[in-house]
Image (cartoon, rainbow, N blue to C red):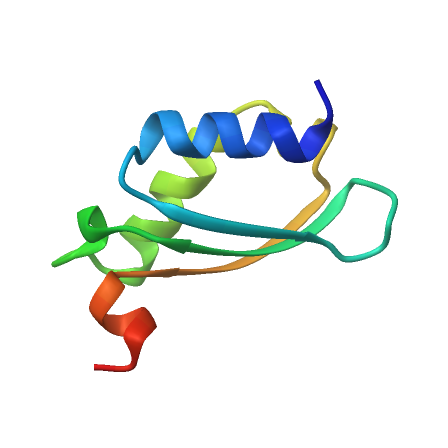
Length: 81
Protein backbone atom coordinates (compact mmCIF):
# COMPACT_ATOMS: atom_id res chain seq x y z
CA UNK A 1 0.00 0.00 0.00
CA UNK A 2 1.39 3.41 -0.85
CA UNK A 3 2.06 5.92 1.89
CA UNK A 4 -0.85 8.24 1.08
CA UNK A 5 -3.35 5.37 1.04
CA UNK A 6 -1.99 4.04 4.33
CA UNK A 7 -2.17 7.49 5.94
CA UNK A 8 -5.78 7.87 4.77
CA UNK A 9 -6.71 4.39 6.00
CA UNK A 10 -5.27 5.01 9.46
CA UNK A 11 -6.75 8.49 9.84
CA UNK A 12 -10.19 7.35 8.71
CA UNK A 13 -10.07 4.40 11.12
CA UNK A 14 -9.26 6.72 14.03
CA UNK A 15 -11.55 9.57 12.95
CA UNK A 16 -14.41 7.97 10.96
CA UNK A 17 -16.27 11.24 10.38
CA UNK A 18 -13.17 13.12 9.20
CA UNK A 19 -12.73 14.88 5.90
CA UNK A 20 -9.05 14.42 5.06
CA UNK A 21 -6.91 16.07 2.42
CA UNK A 22 -3.28 15.04 1.94
CA UNK A 23 -0.70 16.57 -0.36
CA UNK A 24 2.77 15.13 -1.06
CA UNK A 25 4.93 18.23 -0.74
CA UNK A 26 8.06 16.92 -2.47
CA UNK A 27 6.89 14.05 -4.65
CA UNK A 28 9.04 11.65 -2.63
CA UNK A 29 6.22 10.35 -0.43
CA UNK A 30 7.84 11.29 2.85
CA UNK A 31 6.92 14.99 3.35
CA UNK A 32 3.21 15.72 3.60
CA UNK A 33 0.81 18.55 4.31
CA UNK A 34 -2.79 18.02 5.15
CA UNK A 35 -6.12 19.09 6.49
CA UNK A 36 -8.10 16.92 8.90
CA UNK A 37 -11.63 18.13 9.63
CA UNK A 38 -13.58 16.25 12.27
CA UNK A 39 -16.40 17.02 14.67
CA UNK A 40 -14.52 14.93 17.23
CA UNK A 41 -12.06 17.83 17.59
CA UNK A 42 -14.76 20.00 19.18
CA UNK A 43 -13.72 21.08 22.65
CA UNK A 44 -10.17 19.75 22.23
CA UNK A 45 -7.03 21.84 22.47
CA UNK A 46 -4.77 22.10 19.46
CA UNK A 47 -2.26 19.80 21.16
CA UNK A 48 -4.93 17.17 21.85
CA UNK A 49 -6.00 17.29 18.20
CA UNK A 50 -2.41 16.91 17.00
CA UNK A 51 -1.81 14.02 19.39
CA UNK A 52 -4.89 12.24 18.05
CA UNK A 53 -3.68 12.61 14.46
CA UNK A 54 -0.12 11.54 15.24
CA UNK A 55 -1.42 8.58 17.28
CA UNK A 56 -3.47 7.47 14.28
CA UNK A 57 -0.41 7.57 12.04
CA UNK A 58 1.51 5.49 14.57
CA UNK A 59 4.67 3.87 13.26
CA UNK A 60 4.47 5.64 9.89
CA UNK A 61 6.17 8.49 11.75
CA UNK A 62 9.14 8.89 11.25
CA UNK A 63 9.93 5.78 9.19
CA UNK A 64 7.83 6.35 6.05
CA UNK A 65 6.65 9.88 6.85
CA UNK A 66 9.46 12.20 7.85
CA UNK A 67 7.37 15.39 7.99
CA UNK A 68 3.65 16.05 8.27
CA UNK A 69 2.38 19.60 8.50
CA UNK A 70 -1.37 19.80 8.97
CA UNK A 71 -4.36 21.64 10.34
CA UNK A 72 -6.83 19.82 12.58
CA UNK A 73 -10.17 21.65 12.56
CA UNK A 74 -13.80 21.17 13.40
CA UNK A 75 -16.26 21.55 10.50
CA UNK A 76 -17.31 24.97 11.84
CA UNK A 77 -13.69 26.13 11.98
CA UNK A 78 -13.06 24.85 8.46
CA UNK A 79 -16.11 26.74 7.21
CA UNK A 80 -14.79 29.94 8.79
CA UNK A 81 -17.57 30.23 11.37
